[in-house]
Amino acid sequence: MEQRLTPGDTQTCLSQQELAGIMPSEELQAWVSRALGCEALQDAGQIIERRVIKRRPNDWRGSRCFERVAVRGPDGTVLPLFLKYFYREVDVEPPELRTSPDREAQVYGEVLRDSPLGTARFYGFRSLDSKDSVALLLEFVGGTKLSRLSVKQSWLAVARWLAHMHHHFSRSQDHLNALGLLLRYDADFYWSWAYRAVELGMRVSREAGAIVKEMLGPYERVAGPLGSAPPTFIHGEFYCSNILVQEEREKIRICPYDWETAGIGCGALDLTYLLRQSWGMDEHCLIQAYLDGWREKGDFPSWLS
Image 1 (cartoon, rainbow, N blue to C red):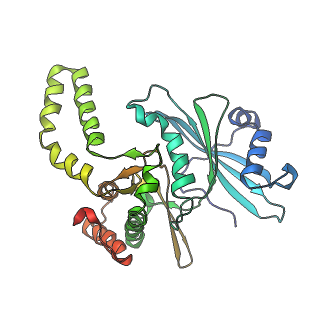
Image 2: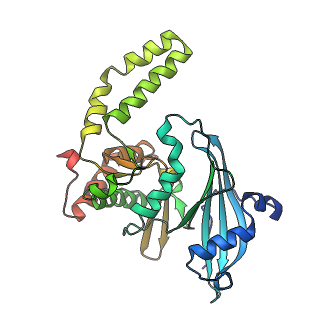
Image 3: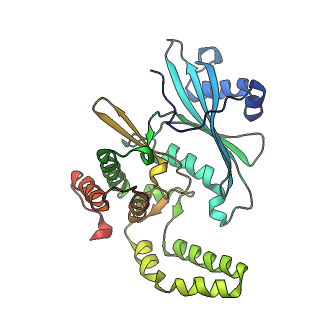
């Protein structure tokens, strides 16, 4: 079945020459062949369409480009794939955020790959010609961003899904700790951002820096409990704009994306991001749905104990 782009996404049809500048079609075909487990190129599904669906300007992560690739298999079935290109900036601060593309690949390849959560299937990750440019190959998931949905049941389903993810990984600390690229959302992490805020304020003026420092007076009441709470695996930016909802018949698939700041920390952070952009949804209902998700697994979030 033909997959639809996320409603509202910008479609930009580039010329073959422009696409070849991103990754030559022959090179992409060979990579797709290996990613799909084909032993010989002639056994691979043939690429029948390439289309850039969105570009993001340069920000702290670097610039990014997203491409939809349609592949027709030997049996005629069309498989939609998603390519995410990163053009990294080497001077990103703080330093731990410079590895965000590698972190996202590790999340898909070593954390989410065998989970029952329904996230996009991981096919591969590779460097491009430039040492600071990489590409991530995933399943293309059609659906609607949660930010564009006003259906209460969809939001409640996302809150329950989040609880299921936190529960699933709450007992996988040894595995998670062995993954060196995951961010550690501990007290030091939260305080590093506080110190950075003061530093940026001081760059404006000494008075601005003093104001920011004064505002951080009660910060220990937040950084301390968050940093010391029993950890689990967290998305890190669980905004409604980073979550796809796919509904088919009576099934619903929740598929968050942009795992570049994923890490180990208190699940309250993800829930707070969801509540922060709840677009008029009843926060109490979302919190209750999150707790219900834990209860469905016969458990309760330890950071609320």
